[in-house]
Structure formats: structure tokens, C-alpha cells
Picture 1 (cartoon, helix red, strand yellow):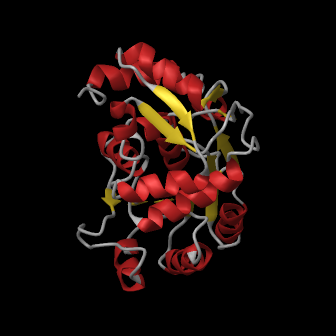
Picture 2: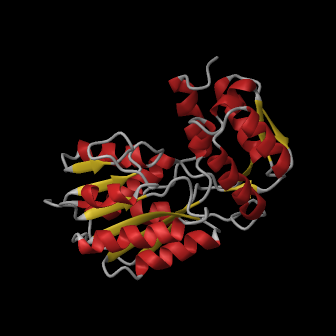
Length: 273
């Protein structure tokens, strides 16, 4: 394999794992960040072309989310640069049940090079990394999710699928919807985290406005709050309450159970006081 791989969002939940897996295989990887060399910033288009130099395949994630205003324009401009630079395969991490994300998917499909779409919803690791980590540690997961169920997907599965489609033939032109193997409510997730961590953890349903106010008080960046509340208002309505077999279809093994994620996270000590 002589292709150089670019991971856009190399410090994110999926991006850093994709980059690590590629490096473990001894493959040439460029992982982007604002402090990288060369630096990359979605807010500064002047930083985009340098990271594409010599790249053959791209794992493409967008910050903060494909639903935010301007995302489609950025994706179009970036994919145009990528194709002009000679990129032969774009792998887009997309959102499940998000109309704006589907518009970005269409841009990637029409870019004029090979593509694969990885459409995902709620990450299991949202409970253990950054977003809800402090909430679990405090014992209360406060979200505007009601009683909706989600097929929480383990980001380790997403990374394994991404590496597979980046490095092996047979995935060009495919759209994979990646989910966990079963549906859980957020109350169910809290119960499983409590059972594996030995902590008292419960789910507290609130309105979207109450969630936004609480997040702001905790110092969450405004751009993230806006993206999250917009998503909660639309996608936590049951539209994603179904599972697929696409993880197993690609990897030849079942998707990771939420209980296994929770056990591993607890064993790593991420929820310890």
C-alpha cells in the first residue's frame, strides 16, 4: 500500500482511533488538528490545501457537526480541493437521520472520485469522553431525550469499519449505517453504566432549553450547544430507533454491545471520582 491517508479531525473520538489503527499497520498517515503540522482548521480555508498534498484517501469528519450552517459549503469546497489534489477515495462520517448531513453526503457522492459514507447516530463514548463524562461522574445524565431509544454505536467499531473501507477494495460507492446491536433508552444506558461502574447513575429528562442553559453554565462552547440542541430537537424523536447489521456486514463480527463498552470504560477508570 503506497496511498497516503489523511484523517481530518485526528483528535476526535473516531479520528484518533482511525489514525492509530492505520499507524499500527505501518501505513503513512497525516492526522489533522489546529495545532498540527501543517495545521488544519475548518474555519480557515487557507489551511485546507496543504494537508491534501500527496494524499490518496481521506477519512473526513466535520466539526462541530454537519447540521450547522455552512457545513455543506465547507464540504463542497474541501472535496473540490481534494479531487483537484488527486484524492481517489473519500470516506465521510455522516449523521443518521439528519437532512443536512444527507445533503453533505450528496456532495461527496458527486465529487468525481471514489466515496464511502459511514452514517452513524449516538456514540457510546459520548458517555465516557468529553460530552457526558462529567455528567456520569456527577451521577446524573441530564438530556432532552425523553424515553426515546437509540442503537448506541461504539466508536471502536466505527474506526474498524473506516480502516477497512480505506484500505481494502469492495467498499467504493457504499453507504453503511453503523449502529450497535440493540436499542436502549437513555435510562437503560444509565442503568448499565451504574451496573458496571459501581456508581449511582441515573437519567434525568429535561427540555431542550433547560439542557442548553445547563450546558452553558458548565462552560460548553456555544457552537457545540447550538449544534447539540438542534440535533436533540429533531433526531431524538424515534427516527433512529432501529438497528442495522452493517457493522457485522463489513467486519464479519457483531457490533459491540453497550454493556461491553461500559465495562471497558469502567475498567479504564474514566468514571472514577
